Image (cartoon, rainbow over all chains, first blue to last red; front, side):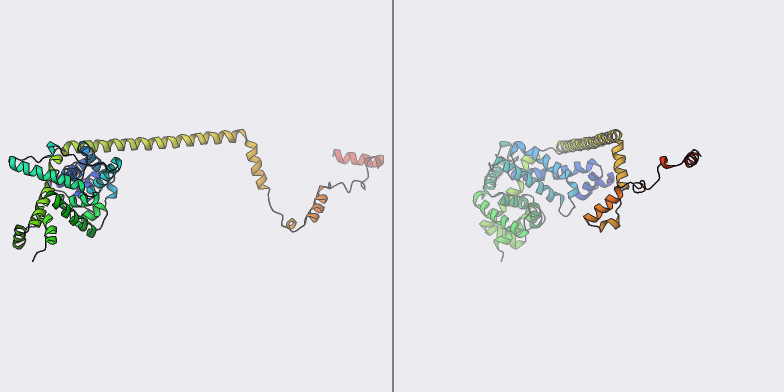
Length: 184
Length: 172
């Protein structure tokens, strides 16, 4: 079963694309990757993925997602599901590293802007935030990123990280409090 | 009166364009250094990792993801075919062994079937004790004609005419 081309061109939902891919139409997978790639990449990068492994981790996230599509019943948004997989991958990676820390900010990671002063400000803010994020406990860091960076609701965050919305809210507020002291 | 905690919760929807500040909230933000710091933090977090993500190419990533999934599907297919082949080979070997065994021991199989066919319970004997059973067995072991033989006249005792009659009856 495949979604007709006309339907694919008129902004299909994630569920449509999943159905198309399951029906053998690889355009469904291609569209899902291009739709969620940046979000997954940003989350993994900010949550502490090694820069050299970012590409592999992003690919692995999508591979695991497509491999287990039968398990996705659509109760959670596809992006929430991707974040769950990405978070589990990071957990595995940190376990392999035995808690070894974390992100190294490269020059290339600095935000590219035309205004040199703004570039410096943004770069400084990013550097401080990166350092601040590294000091947070893993769950608190991921809750903060899913909320502030990805704009997810507490219910979605709770689904993605296997916690409750109330606990997610507490983690978020604690993270904001700690990061404000470090970053602002 | 706006409290800073509810402002913190409102920052994300506003930063992601799902809501806008009310006049009261905007005024609070302008006058509260703590909320202003929180707002800067959310704005920075929203853009954090942008440059790293920009280096990811959607077309290449999806191509590689699909290629790996295809490869896995191919491997799974080969594994499944290998399993089916092994099962078929095992079944063939079992069939050959079974056929060969039947061919080399045909009587054993037949004997077992015959023995099974002739095993039937005798309800009359089951109530007997060991002594009674051995009496019955002794009776069975004696040839049916044994007791009659001593009383039956031997051929040597017959007279010539009687002997000739017996011979004629035997010859028909």
